[in-house]
Length: 576
Image 1: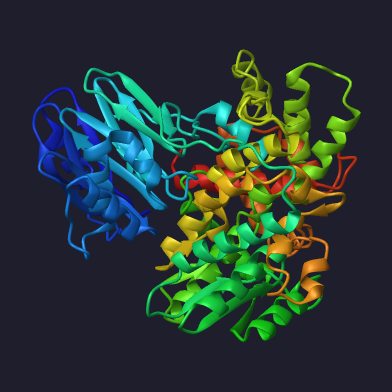
Image 2 (image 1 turned 180 degrees about the vertical axis):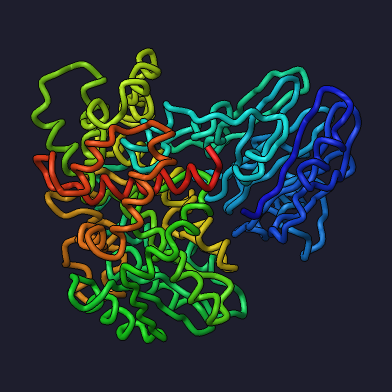
């Protein structure tokens, strides 16, 4: 996996440590070293008089930030690198300087003997870090950290349990014991002494709204901001692509791109064969309405099986979303068409309130248990993954090792009970944004597109849009049974009524069907083969029952097996 590695060391030998990684030191003394992996990754080195940094930075408000620096007495050339702008903001304002930067960035800064890590507001790009002995190491790639000679990589069983519950890892834990993922909107100072100091430069909060303001006023404000964030993410002088499912979110991004861009807009939709349900009528309607050049790609079960191991290996943390492989293949198609940027509609649900909140709203309405953990447990069950099956699925040895493990509810309870939000709906959206958004949706988009040679951009996750969403009355986001009502009002002149009025259905893959066809042999080899048995995570009879569609009241065998396949492939890719 492309990436870069940096290490802050408390003893001599920095250059040898980096050389063992295939990395090239760009600054070192016997307290600190910083290096970049020479593997063709799209990272750069940035410098000021006293600072040096390495990372990947894309800014969408360059002009505003350059003007801000100009007022501070720092004159940078108009063509300076985005990372240089970010580094100068840090030099002038410290971690607070990152708050003004609308963009996608993961940056490591050598500041004296300390290593300072920063991850963008919503988590579009990510960073991992670890300490081994007297040494710190950090990387944009978990593969790079896995290869760090000083790291004694062991499987983190707590993270295994979390993955089976969420279908992703919802916080700072990774599957490698002792390796952590940075949380978004943070600046982390790793000191040569071993201390670690975190500073939050941005966190969503519920802003006060004006109940006397008409709904139309909120919709107009939202429309203006939607146009701004989409326009900022269009590549100047180049065509742009959009992943178009036919849902409201990808449709509005398509419509705004077609209206605002001065170059062709290409749209891409996927299906899995005529015999399975699809949304091609909706995506085709939007493409025709907006005048885009539309491409429909068909992926059958054999194609998915052929690319599944490769897809999983590209992920720093596993994602049990069956659409991940189609996302990769779609991004490659966009790259073959010569595109460098492709937009998507991700973010509409966690920011504006999609249908996944309905079970929790029903729970809250009927709730009679005042224990905050009851709310968090209900949230975990709403995922409909393996939360209630863990005692049955995990082997006795694993359950014994997890006997004193902290509860899974800890991943979501701080958000669900946060004093930053007074509305229960906003607490749900806050939870979705900080867990699924930052640790599933955005990393998946970034890894699949980057691996394909294009840059994926998610306008609906822009932090100014998130701020605006939490300043809108919750009753306008969920109006009766109408989800994302104010978002639809803001773009109702752009899209056909059929798109605005259709209920959200989601793109469904025929996983259950494929597991008894093209994926059957792969699943058997992976889950019942010697490697899985030796690892000893799961009770073999339970896995066999699920493979035969037995042992569950609700027919979720396919999605459970998919989680196990994803995890097994990831563990093999990382040699754990």
